[in-house]
Length: 113
Image 1 (cartoon, rainbow, N blue to C red):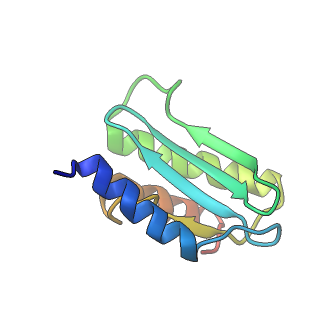
Image 2: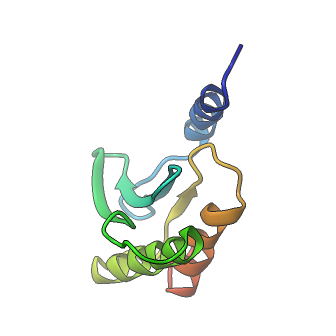
């Protein structure tokens, strides 16, 4: 019997066959655990993380508020690195809740998907 995590990983592999990050359009990958949320911008041609942000060091606030902070932080860091266009990778998670919040706030911060 497959667990919820096994299903997500299977779906993630299927998504990753279609989504590739390049130098001109890197991949914005979002991962959420029960406690934290992480976002990183990856250039898949060289296999290098260009920019990353997480809410590990932010102690206060709800998970939703911290997800908004991660979205702002990733947009700010991408602005510093002169990255405007990205490909969004939801990493096998449904596009609701905290995943959607990170994407929406990053769009408001200036990123184009």
